[in-house]
Image (cartoon, rainbow, N blue to C red; front, side):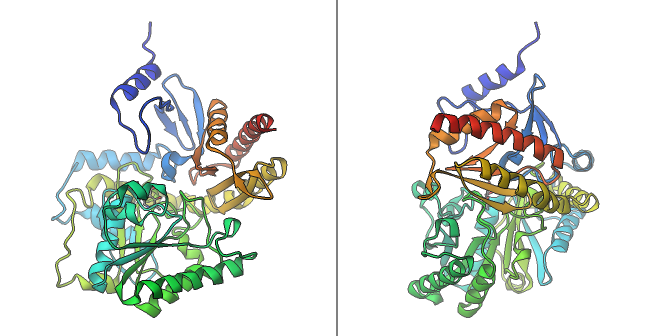
Length: 438
Ligand SMILES: Cc1ncc(COP(=O)(O)O)c(C=O)c1O
């Protein structure tokens, strides 16, 4: 009898693996044994459409042959190298990343992932300004390390508040406005007024950084209204504050642009990235540093570093991933599929399913805000989302859920056909859950 590898994977996982953000007992996680493009499968070959991109990171799709080959070749040439060395592929990776950033960015500091990119961006901003406080939004996620988790706006901050100097404010989110706004213009103007009052009240001369996700992702794909990020830039300039834009989730194609902020007429001082830069084939992240902040450390020692900063397997995979994304028009595909297939498809679902309160997003970065009542906009409970997750998974779609939402976040290489297949699955799952709610 052949061994049931899916059962073995589940048994080993539940016996020995400690999982993120979870009570450990009773976890029932899908087994992923292989993948290609937008599809993953278990050991038995059961196929699932990956509309989560794992953790919203597999922008280039699973097992892209050019990226896999680059990692293999680099492993055969030199599998590791210390950070205090010059390495051709690390240099090329930095050059490729800077090639996607606007003019005025000089260097890249590589980290192991997104959270330590945030840690180091905050460190740079504090040393550059000689100030301490970091302002970030309540609706945000910036990572799980010391300062990154305290910069985070959501519930994950509360049990982890060990870092100093973090203050939160509300960013714009018209559907659940904190400002009694009825239009994007009002939301933008009032959110900027609120931010300026927070800056003034905290003391502008104490504030080192304004840290924002260009498009807050985990918090619900909150595309900012036109003018908001430019307004934040103006406040940063007015008060001498460093603007850090966190592009860990939104960057490298997810919004249909290389960087999400590129649609918003804004120039940050520091850009953090991870996930989509190499689709997570090897863990990596980093900070893209403006000429001005980079110059601060020309003669002054930067007091930060990592054993694996600019790891050669990560560097090789970045060069290959950016190259393939360029030559195959993968970012353009994300934009087109978002406009022509995902946006209209989700709009049709919303027309049929009253549980969908709002559809929002762009590119391959969308959220369905699920409500118990469209008038009051009361979010559905965790039980409804859990049911939906089960219905979707059992029909062959791997979903991404957060609070009362489903995030529709496939790889940037998703095809129109795969989107149509997914829409039919969302439709059936919503119908089945709504039948129980009625
Ligand atoms: C916007 C943002 N910043 C930072 C992080 C943290 O990245 P990592 O999990 O690689 O540490 C995440 C992770 O989801 C994120 O979405």
